[in-house]
Length: 153
Image (cartoon, rainbow, N blue to C red):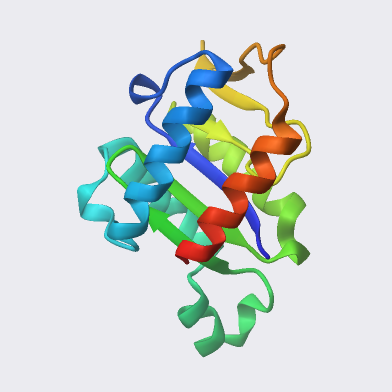
């Protein structure tokens, strides 16, 4: 299993947690068909992806260049409104910090798929803000969704 993160076009996603989770499920199923084709994505996601790959290259490039070590993208699925990225667990903290930074920079939403609490962030006034998720039971939802996504990879 990888450490998984999602960035998304803020206008495309619902801001209520349950609605977001339904939307998220549909998006990752659709993104599995696109794989690494960034040309179908929103411009802000396209720019974020280019910058992210300069720090975390895809797996093939990392193995061809030993300077990256374990700091690479393990898997990636790209859709029109999302980029779903899997990293090695060895770089989980660094990947989280970089993706938060890039999500704020490009004013896109952020979802820490691998987190225990299922926090979803939307950009507001240049900062990411967690949406209210008081109705969530993310542990049940997370296990189902991560298994389906993993099977698509």
